[in-house]
Amino acid sequence: MSIIGSETRTIAKRRFDALGLSLSFGRHVESCDDFMSSSIDERIEDLHDAFEDPNVKAILTVIGGYNANQLLPFIDWDLIRANPKIFCGYSDITALSCSIWAKTGLVTYSGPHYSTFGMLKHTDQTLSWFTQALMATQSQTVEPALTWTDDEWYLDQQSRKIEDSDGYWVVNEGAGEGTLVGGNLCTLNLLHGTEYMPSLDGAVVFIEDDLESKPYTFDRDLTSLTQQTGFDGVRGLLIGRFQRSVEMSTSKLAAIVSRNPNLAGIPVLANVDFGHTDPLLTLPVGGSVSMSAGLGSSLIMIE
Image 1 (spheres, rainbow, N blue to C red):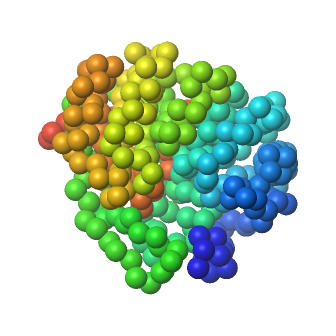
Image 2: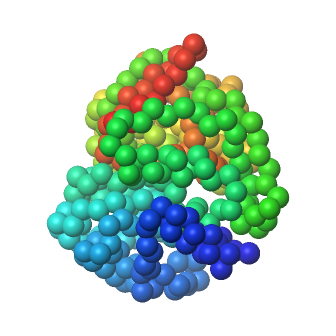
């Protein structure tokens, strides 16, 4: 079974039907080249068609990848600005969600792909956070999930490895509030020095990385982010849960943060439920958030 094979699609359709949502797909959604993607022109066509179509109320990316930043010079920002709608995805999609916020002021969402909805088991928390973020009007208090998974669920939908969560990791104590900005760290760093990089001044930044990261590469990429113009105005840092193969520990992460002078005095809360493990939070890029990191209690509140 592939991530977006027939079983995944059947399960995903059932989940969307249960939410009262109907699905349509871009004309080039089946296209795939040597780089596990499709051409720039094809992806731009599908993106523009989705924003322009009045029948489309929300856009979910099918899956992540490596090269969404190729699209940025070709996007019609005026078209998006004139047709605001929900846009949601994660990982490589960070390049799109952050640039849309930076160029148009449209709040986007770091959250599940279409393919995520094809997971047969252990999706209740992800779905709850998704509907709270996109279909509710009240503020959302985010508590740590009780369990989590880091398995290739699409290879065997029946046999899943469920692990108990150890909650949030308090790395730097403190509290902060601001505009939520971020996503996948190595993808966000691709925007440095471009017109597509969102402002960090007054932001609560959220970052995560996948199994291709190691503590030393995460350290390097985090250092690069903290050296960006405006980072001295950052009011808090949220770090998503690391996959097991990254071999990150609380002590390693504490060392990475403590030796970075640009993080001194900034509250840092880690092991939050977003990234490349499940369950997966839906977070508004450009939305308002408050956070507190304390040894007694920690809190994330999304407005």
